[in-house]
Length: 482
Image (cartoon, rainbow, N blue to C red):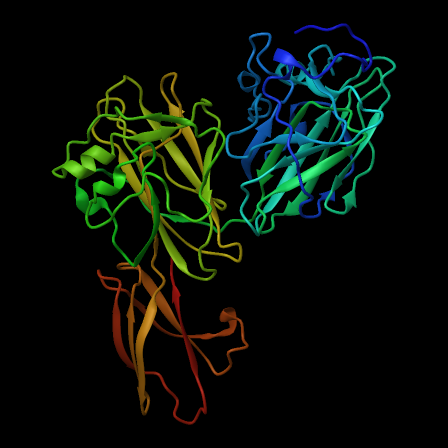
């Protein structure tokens, strides 16, 4: 809806259709936000791509002119007019009177999408006398997040500024721009047990765009070679089941495969599907294996509706220091005349491409990766899709996580002979036995005394003469060679 270009008009209320899509609620202060110096809007590289995207909001772009905000990605990031599902972005404040306007000044950056989005915002008619608070939730406790906020008016005579308060920390003043582009500001924080966060703008003038990104350092995944889907023995049963996801299939838990029960409503702790992972389908081609349950599950899947933009999902609750196995399946198999594939990134490591089987070449594929959980207890996977046609949409049909941390079940010493039994290791993977007379030494300073490998069942039974009876105490670590 076009309006007269008045600075911040007084009198018209936050009413009727103009207010659709804006939610006002009560917010409480969250963790302290460490604010960076405000930066003047200049080009698409302003938009941070650190870590994994958690949520976006373009609150003024309500599709009123027929142009959805998420059709105008900037630097690979799509902004959602009504806020990303799950993040629950909301406004609150005493005495605020909110409205939308789409005639703010073009910042004239080299990116037309960026310019389009920056000309629309939610503004506060009572900006001179009230603050405006923005809140969101459902974050993972202990994870580190980045929040980025844009203010742009840019019309001649509009020289306002706002400061941002997050927790107890107050930012420098951020300018809306006077006959010049406005500014953006970035802050970082660690989510607490409330899983919520908020910031308050004083005065609460306007909000054009914002995004939140999970920048927690995630452990590196060691990827194996993808395999083509063939039968229920594909489904790994090493170690102990930790959690799974069978997207779009609410009855998935009635179709166990190889003794593993997949959950349509994921049981992975703090599970979050990223903001572009919001499409679902139940008509992918059957892989035609000998197992009807397996075939049924693989015809369901979730996909990203944001084209070739990365899709993410994450979870937490793992035990730091434990070794985990992840297994992910993609299957299309409908022969849609396109060769589709995707890579998966965990930490800094990216997998080989896994094929969907969408070109009539056969079933899709699955891939296994392993990693050691770090202090965050969480992991995020980033999927990047490719296609020979027009549908490079990231996709997932099944996913599971297993704890394959080796467990020493017995240890004995007789003279110089050490006897050791280990279970729950990764099948056929080599290890090194390290020895030290002091637990305080870092593993890099322990002495390698034996190289061997787990058997096909992930077990070890060894007896070897490596003990020095003259030493009062000795300690041992099994170090897996990934």
